[in-house]
Length: 114
Length: 109
Image 1: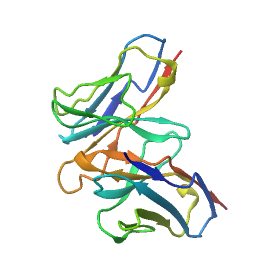
Image 2: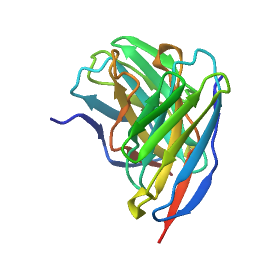
Image 3: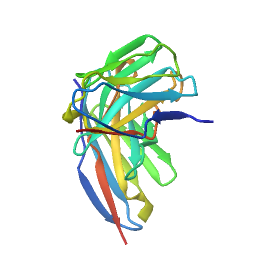
């Protein structure tokens, strides 16, 4: 009963490098989300997905790429990391039916871009 | 676009009642949720209001007024463990869910 898992838990990278954050859920939830959390800004939506092969931009999508080839996986890629992308990243999932208003969050990935 | 406003900080004493307000501007509104987050942890779901009125879950209640674009979270019989950040979130079209900046609750003995 893994639920929703994110990896890695911590990541340090350098400016300009490509970084991929992984998210995997075992519930077969239709919806998946990526948020970043910075002090003073709460949780800001980067991208979300309604199903496999369906993704849409959130509030702050620039500099990020997502894919969803399988329902259970929703990786987030920073194509060329910048210092402003230093943040805590949370992945979340929710069902599409009754109870779909409830988001389940992973433990987060703390990313530092030097 | 969507935006949510909530107070940045609230302080209350143990055993008291505290209310955290949330006002929102959004298109395609489907409901208002509340989440709790302790330092170093992930947000966890507390409650959801899809219709006007009060929803009660133990010591926590949440209220929604769609006509006023307003909601609140009410925490009763405050305990030290309630010290955390509380976020309101709006679910819009396509299940797009946007969060407020969060309210930091400090519970004093």
